[in-house]
Image (tube, rainbow, N blue to C red; front, side, top):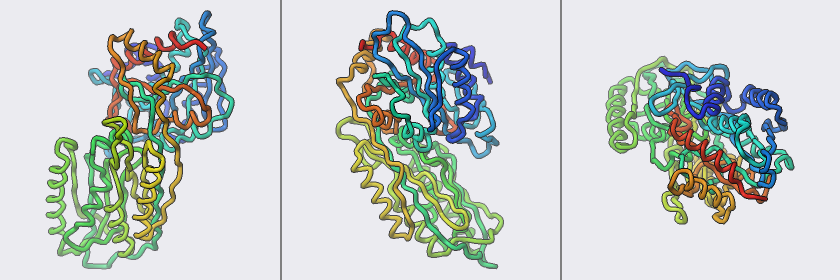
Length: 485
């Protein structure tokens, strides 16, 4: 595999990205990437600092003759989503991403690549380093812990930013300008239980696994109607042809990733194991048919395993199974204002037991705050009927489009001049930081854009090489043609 990313163009962008993939930076473990940026700024003679929320700010003065342009804030987040294939041995807190060139793309070996948002970070560093560019006053804002709660954006230091325009470099389709995004809400659900002993005899322990799903970003890929491993697993548990005693469950991963894998350890009457095996095989064919053309690799398997010592009480397990089956998941409503855009969705991201509790996590998104809250209350009601406690936390608002934006007009003209076609103007169902940053700094003129990144938040993540060059060319031209103050 060709791992020489520094041979790609534009050179400065890929030079920095090649360094970034070597730096472990899962959410809440961003110390080394912050140090990399602060050391870089010092070497370049640029003013830089870190705030209490662990955001990093860097300033670069306008080039001669450009002092009359509006100040531009270039913004990207420091962390990445740590997802890997089950057969991959990898520690995201210590290991470097094994990035390589695969034809027209850059991808990683069995893990997320971190192009989300590493390419945005690398592009900002390239702008800060390149002394040949023409631009007005630039501020770089590198935000902390975006992927697990947008902590850095929420904790922005008031009065630190002086610019009038914010360019968020965290979108994932070249040729599109994003002028709005969804808000978010977390539903954190807890079942408390006292573990009971498993039957001494008469039962066979079995592990049921669902895997091979595509997963992906729960904002961007939710419209693809991909399967949710948690929902597939619990649907099977609910429809089992024989008694099942639930010992443990571990499904999904991060809150903003569609679950790709889930497994449960169960106990089944020994005489019924063959019947269960037949039902699982039939169920696999059923869901493969249901998701034909969407998911090609769905695998549902059952195999005997060592008997665990404890299990969930029967009543708790039954309530849990029924509640997960009933829990809303996927697209709830499409936008009438912008055809093709998801308005409201939920992602049942995580279901995990630890012998004392079962914890579930759903991430809700909507461009309409009232609808997002109503969906959260509906999920809370489902689990309340099952005896669980739900906390709705981390709410943040979306970003409403401003079609009269001066930077939008300037960027549309720039794109048409450079590439001979008009960019698409759209909104995104994912939760960009623009809405939160805009609440700290009202009146910011904001646009989000980026290169083409496929399958973010999954080990299939890849970034298109040519789109990075086009995106960076567009960024540089935008800086050179920023509106005057």
